[in-house]
Image 1: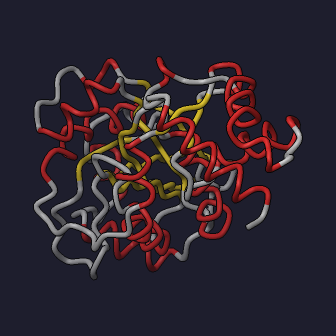
Image 2: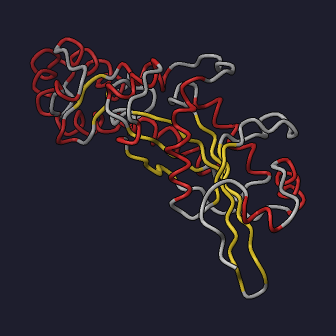
Image 3: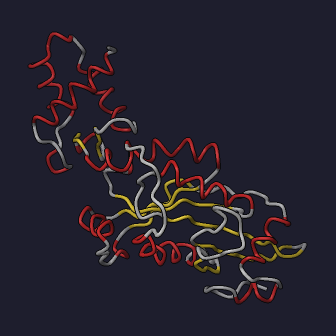
Length: 275
């Protein structure tokens, strides 16, 4: 067993024994090391090594050790086990509470001057072709007008995100920007950021997170949503702009019922595009 594996195993045991199961009960790295040295001194692992490994483990998706910053201590998160570590088969529609998130992410697009509408019920596109939310923006240029399409695939939590994120990837054939969006809590964010960075780098899919307090997040899971507008929309990773073949964009616009430039100006809701 490597030193890192020893630190992980022993630290998880220490946190469990001390009941460090939330940020309010978190232990500092120094407290963990003092217990480490007292109970497991035979391991002879230096303090700096233990502290460095703790910091790395808190960022790794396969560790239940988490932190909201070194100075705020370390604790075990059961949410990590439920929403990051489990490899379940993806749930099937209907998808329930995620529709409660639509207004939040629609407003995020409206704030960036897109015309926006819910598009989950498009029937004429291929599998995974119907994004939950679509934004369209026209920008005048010296040589004409540029059309930009952005899509958002929404889930109510990060559960099974490794399967669901590929729905957002599939939208990139017609969308200039594509996002995967969900709700989460602060203690999940470090794990998600580390695990999702690879997908952002490889597939150029953006990640949007609605950060909620624990009680509100649990309410969303139960279907008693409360005022989700109290949450904070965080663009965890941006979606880089991609040039898309016009034929695929036109196919998508046709599916939306848009067949003329005039219809682009009135589709969905939002500000009138600039002439």
